[in-house]
Image (cartoon, rainbow, N blue to C red):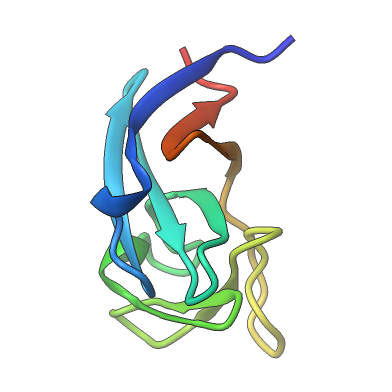
Length: 104
């Protein structure tokens, strides 16, 4: 069973943006899409470790700010022709509160 950690409110994360949470020695980026869906990924591009939280969110992807790799927010997989994957985390919204799972 997953442990859930409250990390803030939905309004703390800008639309088409992200917020970084540090927990358990890991830096996790929580992304918010234009339609308020939330995704959480390790804050490191699988290519060269670029900070995904500083990238541009578009649709269900984020573009790494270093080399413009597109990472699928749902799976953490790089979009072809690029290859690689970053760890994804569970995230949910309850009464406006953002909860991060699988940490702790």
